[in-house]
Image (cartoon, rainbow, N blue to C red; front, side):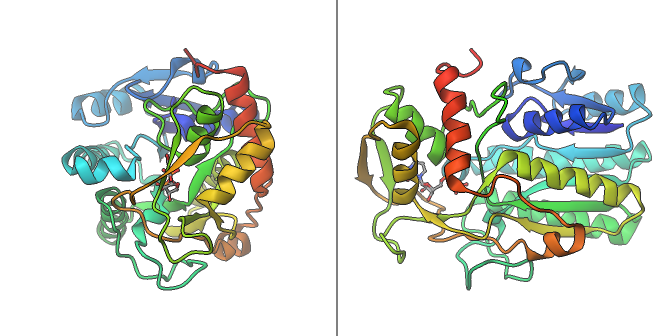
Length: 327
Ligand code: UDP
């Protein structure tokens, strides 16, 4: 059985959809601090906190059939991590060490970890492949890179096998439109732009217009949340077949500036995105574009929704029909 930590969150809930569709036995563990019960859509869950070793111990004792753990239960806001590093290192790093120890105690040695493009920092070259130097510009990126390093040490010491999936910018929503992105507060560009267009948020602040990019705004590689989820299924298959530890970058290999994303949102919604220039946001690298050649070659991963237009349309469908999110 697959344990899905943070299954009630944005990416976790899309993972659950694939697990239900493929008939994979699974269990969610979530504290519902950020996640939504409504996003589980029938997937079984246990409420508990990753930072609480007793909760984890009980979870593994009660469910001895768990053989793989997926981890989606992290804080994810780059800007907030600069202001509150302790919050990020405690949850995203320290709690994961406790989790790994509890997994070991329970005899579980397979782990799929949600890592991030933020581990690379300012790119030395794009697209960024797996060999690119790792030098995060934010505590968020540091908190994830530390776990990648801890996982390496656990493999050497204990034969603990993991797959680290480094997400670039997760976006979009389930095309069937039952689940989508609903963060409080919302900080991610595509939903913020949509909510601003809908009049649900004030004018979008464009963080930094003097970067060394085609129009001065940051470049990111947006990847559909279901394409990310698909990679996790491949990772589970690999680990269950006795595969070794791996790290993969996940993106579409194409970068879009903040202004291009605003244009795409205006096109999809037919609405204007009120926006204004604002200072750079701390911790933001200028340009993040993935090379995902390795996971394509090794596992045949092939994104189904690689087009930014489609990603934005799916996000728009969700927000249009759920203007208050899950509430
Ligand atoms: N961004 C922006 N205004 C916003 C939110 C984001 O200009 O209200 C920019 C942000 O500076 C970054 C890009 O959009 O360059 C993507 O940011 P997001 O927070 O969506 O993802 P991140 O790259 O931090 O994971």
